[in-house]
Image 1 (tube, one colour):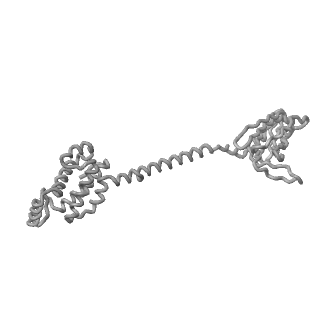
Image 2 (cartoon, helix red, strand yellow; image 1 turned 90 degrees about the vertical axis):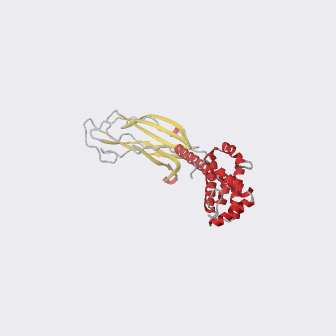
Image 3 (cartoon, one colour; image 1 turned 30 degrees about the horizontal axis):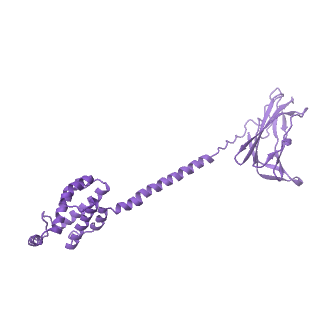
Amino acid sequence: MTRVGWVLLSAPLGCAQAVDGLRVETNEPRAFGYQVGEVVQRKVTVHAPMGWRLVEGSLPRPGGRGQAIELRRVAASVQAVPGGQRHELALEYQVFLAPANVRVLEIAPLRLRFEHATRSEEVRVEGWPVTVAPLTPLETSTRRGLGDLQPDRAPPLVDTHSIRIRLLGCAVLALLLLSALATVAFGPPWRAARNRPFARAWRELRHLPNQPEPLQWRAACRALHEAFNRCAGEVLFEPGLDRFVTVHPSFGVLRGEIARFMQMSRDEFFGDTAGADHRRARADDNGASTDDNGASAERDAAWLVNLCRRCRDAERGFAQSP
């Protein structure tokens, strides 16, 4: 059985006070079933803060002839622990009493003195009862600690300081990884993607009406053509389209659509005025506005916006969808 308690010190006027930092643990021996000649072992552990020193003269001395239970051996050791020292005493007693009936013997209490730079304190280790049985078994005393059922031993405490440090380190590392992931997803790369040529053109063309005005149509074509120029690093026309697709293979599936846009852009900005007037007149006769391919202006606007969206996805490396 192990007992843990705060140490009591001797003070003037016979009063007892608790000493901060000094703590005593006793590993109690079996309290019953001893007979004459048997050895009783008791262990005492004193945890002392840094700066406290055990006075060797206060250790118990073996001897005490003529007593029912005699201290035979004292082994003292000290170990350094975080924040102080741990003093361990191994006490060995021998039973010299052969009673006719069961007798209760008391292991005498101990007083150990510890010194500090400015003061000294005396700690008390309480006594412990043991029973000595005769050669014939008798009913033991019902005193607490001497019955058949003994209280459970408290589980040893495990030092979790290193585990908490590792958990804290893992939490900090996880926080750094999450911060890096957030930076990659929502930081400069995300802002850079918004400033790519077709991403900027898409923000201008996505609100283009189905039947745009002539100035709106020309502005939309100009914005998309400027996106192609910025992406290619030069003014891009239909003859340079193969070289553009070779350098930017993600636009390969859009080559036919891009060629159509290049032809439309050329006709819009560089076509003859007479041809344009003739096409507008023909469109008025038919009751709808058409281009050279016969598509209506509403269809052209939707197609142009869809082409810009697909080009934006291509420059981001996304899969193309019609």
